Image 1 (cartoon, rainbow, N blue to C red):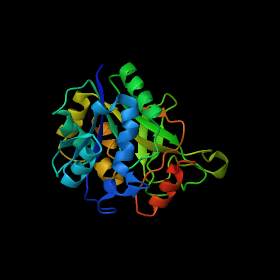
Image 2: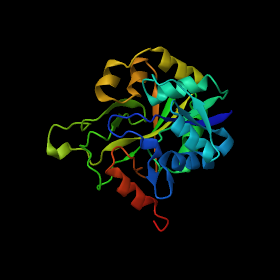
Image 3: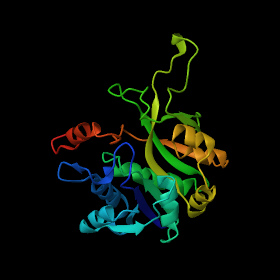
Image 4: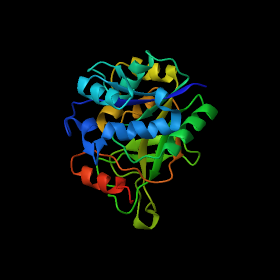
Length: 244
């Protein structure tokens, strides 16, 4: 099966304009993510889907390819769906452009699971570390079955508990690595709008639940660090230091 990684990237953001081009140590964040993706699938199969010439120029200056997409894409996955019409692959791995600490092995794991479970959307998760605040609205929490099927994701603290004696011992967070087929991407895009749950939580994968599509969750070995707001930059730079 032919596999590619598509990294959706937009310049405009209400919380952090220009986020994909923020410099982390010595290069733009979008390039950190592209380099990780290239280790998994090869540089020739990595694409950045963007509507902004500044991002496109940065990507090409580092030897990567970009796909021009509409500025009106509702979500990153809608942007990947649009890009998928311009390139021919069996599996499209969507890697979020603001998680520069992910391991390329987690991308390879997503690819393998998608090959083995082609009828399911695949998405990563990890345990929220004790250094993170699980109550943060910036962290999508994962609720899954014991067979790793997604039940729900929320920015609220879930799952709940009736009393402290049965409080969850750990909480799970989404890792933004997704595995899609072309048909799944078009199904998602053709919905034509954000679903009600998706809009309420601002978590795009919830649209697949309204579409009746099963989402297979897989555990990533370690917690990834995302750059959601400017204050996250120093934390991520400290992690990316060569001696870490």
